[in-house]
Amino acid sequence: LMNHPFRFSVSIGAASDIDTLVSTARRAEELGYWSVVIPDHLDGQLGPLVGLAAAATATSTLRLTTLVLANDYRHPAVLAKELATLDQLSGGRLEVGLGAGWMTSDYEQSGIVHDRAGVRIERLAEAIGVLKGCFAPGPFDFAGEHYTIRGFDSRPLPVQQPHPPLVVAGGGPKVLTLAARTADIVGVNPNLGAGVIDAQAGPTDTLEATDDKIETIRAAAGDRFDSRVLQTRVHLATIDPDGRALADALAPAVGLTGEQALASPHALVGTAEECVERLEDWRARWGISYVTFGTEALEVMAPVVERLAGR
Image (cartoon, rainbow, N blue to C red):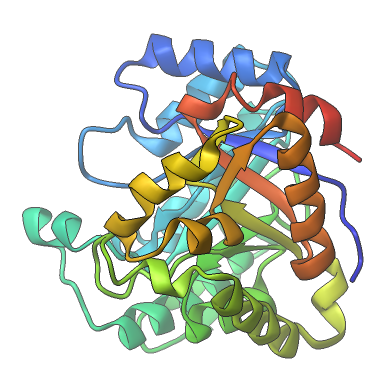
């Protein structure tokens, strides 16, 4: 395995107002985090593109990551202009995360058509092609089942060429295969095929399930595997010597035992030293080097970030 340096990001999507979002982004930059991320849901969270624009103007080195935009909510040719503008605004600090869309309630409440997973993933694959065409100089054509582009010259262009780093995240073999072939950063997620986070999600998160996901990525990426950065979202992160009791209490909600949860790359608990060792184990076993926490772990995980960021 090629060891990429550790990078840490924090999700600021839970911020209920723009001032909180901006102050959290500034604090993340101070603490040595690589990026802030905002997910894309139609619930109470702030909008990801404008939210990241606010974070961009409040910081100078912090990367700005959509983790991840639901492809079905925006046409890629329209999205490309916003993303390129955001890359310019930030001086080339954008990371573009794109996914097939998964949260059933978003679709049901908004009336956006919720196609079966296979169709959503095909559309995502085409959208990645369209975005890459938009980010390249000059006009291009694209003829797909879902998108047709004719002589389109998308401007402005992003600062980062040929395009900002692309993040594609997923938990099933189809999305992970697509990610391995097309993305710079592959997000290793639970399988959210059920459209909700419940007891079906956990068993797709175990150590063994993660081994299988990495093999899928490796097979699909081929000789490009070493250049792919692998990312995980940690849902339970705390510096707590008695982390086992916490895991035992919380894991059943996602269909796992505490032991299974702690072995997965989605929980990080223990002393700071134990957490550092766990992260080094993840990188050695799976190649995972890019770790995303929730806002609640921003300060808590600062000692771990200080020890490992960039190493």
